Image (cartoon, rainbow, N blue to C red; front, side, top):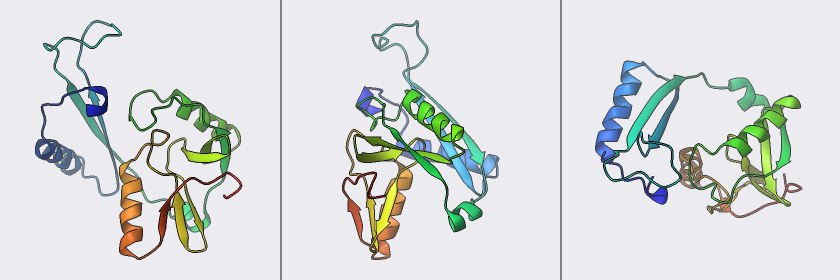
Length: 176
């Protein structure tokens, strides 16, 4: 939110309590939480609303099982040119590039579209991309071309705890 000048009144602690309440109330064992912050309700304008408009947060949970078959057998993915804007590091509702990439994957019965700029792999339409070669996990470095999300951070931490080499460097489609 700070990257696009949305100042939230909620503290990390209060938001954590709200999220935990959602998990408990919905009895989520395996799943995810979607959180969206907005500037608040105001008339349409390309300029930010005035200080009297208060930001709002919306959140919901979604339960889902673990994809054991996909974990065991892998998935089919296609590659597609990354047509997204140049601030993919900002999580926003601007998902048209991701949606078009995912639809391309669906058209070819693929589970994911691996996006690339030129020859350089960036990320999936709805996932991070990792390549494992010679016992080393590779993923795109943190910059404006990718979203540095929670899953990426967790995988990096788990790899480090397990003493698995983890390199954040660019790699090509051919490297996959």
